[in-house]
Image (cartoon, rainbow, N blue to C red; front, side, top):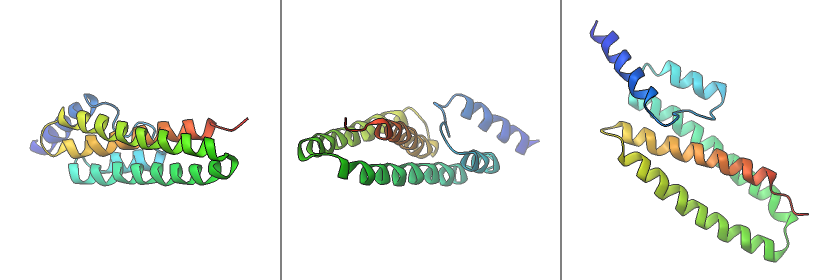
Length: 128
């Protein structure tokens, strides 16, 4: 009964969260499902999601960079630096809205979500 109550409480907590695992692959969503509501296990899942998105974003930059002239590269580098600052402060703000150990999950999940959004923007940005 106690385990059921804990699982139910975690489900309620997740439903109130801003999109834990949103934009994650099926494998990553399955990881979250298998976590059993254990914060450290959910953290591993969202960390994987963030690492995957970050690696994809870096790859997208490496693919886009040779297509840009020096002015465009400079503009993209500056925009990326500003975006990283935005991502970090936004995610820190989301994390402080949480209590206890779940704040670490909210922080990394936010970074994964915003990095995935940035990746889509990068993939659509083509010099014309």
